[in-house]
Image 1 (cartoon, rainbow, N blue to C red):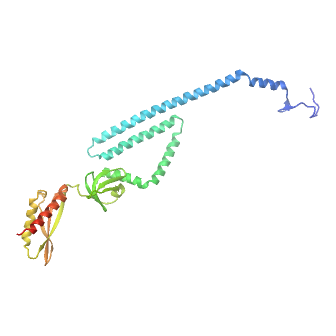
Image 2: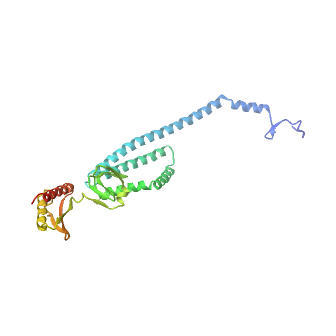
Length: 294
């Protein structure tokens, strides 16, 4: 068939070819064929079913990991705590810290494995967690210093719970050594919370650690009094007090000679627990002897 080069007489074309209505009708009939629609529906349903099975398995695996990880973390915490408890020199607070650290390390590993079950790239998660940890570490430098100082205090143990210490202007009895701070109770019953970094970075005076303490009592003797007699009286008073250590006998010596008066110092040793009681008792006895007629 030939066509004249006349746009008015040429039949319409699609895609450069002749357009026939019967071709369009045939294609439309194929698109609306119920068999094709059913096949498409069946294919989609199969894909949904396969996807559901895949996610169900992932969810079940993640659930198993969570339960096993939670139980395993608890068992690891208890086992490590029991193992460290068999070491007498290991501090209880430090034991709890390491046991808790092991628990959370296992839980963190389980969380990463659970995310991996759902197809999440764990490498990127670890990188992100590392970056977040670095940012948090920079933001909490002071807090992390307290944690590190707390660990060093628990390892080296310059003081223990119940001991009397002095650090800078702080003096008191240690009540608790925490991960961030240490609780003290002053002699007048005031609660004191000291950051661990402060306790670690300053000299610590421990009044209880050695078990024994020395004390000096100074007495002024008038020029009209017999210095030797007063000296012997002080020695007798110290010898009669049961709290004064017998292994280290008390001593009396002249600490500040003067024309008008002489200062005598009574030096004695006592246990750290009896330090203040012995000091008060000896001072009261010396005062009574000084006031009583000779």
